[in-house]
Image 1 (cartoon, rainbow, N blue to C red):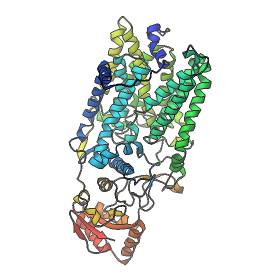
Image 2 (cartoon, rainbow, N blue to C red):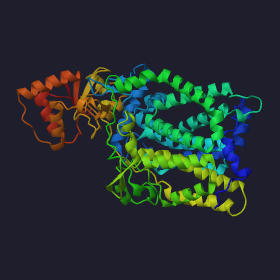
Image 3 (cartoon, rainbow, N blue to C red):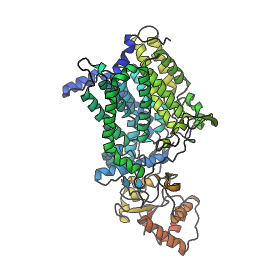
Length: 612
């Protein structure tokens, strides 16, 4: 393969990156139908992406209320609760410090990955059909939406051939990292705004380059301003969807911008003043909206400024890069030992894809976009290895580039292995550029390159996500009987209480649209040493006692001291009612313990309650 400068047809995609974006005209119904027919290939690709996403998540759809993603059920319970709390914005009952968990302290929603924008956007679905339906819908929509957004970017901004764009978009939307993160990490799979952000940055760059126009000697100020305003809006929205994705996007674009400037210095000299001005305008506008929410996240009540996950633990194993994901149709479960869990197969690209991508990069030569993608992919891939390189499960003495981020506030809280997620669109772009060049040319490459790309992607074809049945929420909650012992907005204590390890009682609040609060639970808050980030909160004596009975059964000795403590703890929580479902494991032992603590119980539907 030659690395010589491309011919005019080969250079078309790079030129298309800086081509003018045509604004759509107003469409009448007839013109809309004509446009859809004209773009039937794109519509077909989009429908195929939706079908693939539906196939991957079909295990949830018989009844999302009783189905669960088997590989990460705890996080699914957490995100369903997030969606229920977010939906209350439609009822006028929403605050960034919610009192519906961890009573009486509450939970800082900005500190947690609460996908606020998605929850509010789909609030009608949640309130009508329930949070589990919204969760299943988002699991599907994030995969398909991300793929469709990248397809549009590749075809309309990069000007790529539809076949090449479809292959690249499929990797962006359904790559190993995206599929594994679909195991309950909605904030990581909601990446459909990333191509929009990239498009706005490219649009801003084109508007800032005087060489892109004939009739003016300076930047197109109107397009610079409109691009900056759009970029500020997209960044602001992404903050309320998933800040980690935004951070990875921003870091990747920074690496690519520096690389692009080095490889095309003429463009850098021409566009830098206008581009820098536009980026500062975008940052300023976004900061106007985000200043208070970000202050609230890091310095507000229940906020934390540090990460709680060890970068040493969440480091990608070097061997995982050339291993096929266990979640693919040809993957092996034995490879799971190379990562921390089934939601973090971010680096499992397999040797065929790495080999073909390398060959494509060499063939594309020194094209600025290709070079920027290569450097960006290498940088993000290297950062994924963490502070010390791990090889085949063994931590070596070789330091990783991630050590450069060690100690930086906020940034050092990022999980190293998730930096690999940024490599998917970079690799996809290289594949698209190569396949597009081949399809627009002649000779053997016209068939060989797209076929090689397809073969490299084939081992990554994902299998449907494993699902399982989960116990139904008690009728005491679903039928609204809970209102007999706690007022809306009050605090109900489910027994046993929710914990980060066993958050299942949070499903009670989810089923009631978060209309009542609960003590303790699964969340991130300032309960670590010195107010640092921790998962969950301290257990009060009564909670610890009930948790122990729930695990082991038996009847503990209860005296006046325990009864006084139980009353004190209930008062601290602000609780109105304690409830125990009749089908809870060790229900008889728990009921006996509670009756010793709070007196005789009252049966309501399928639960015993104690009014405190």
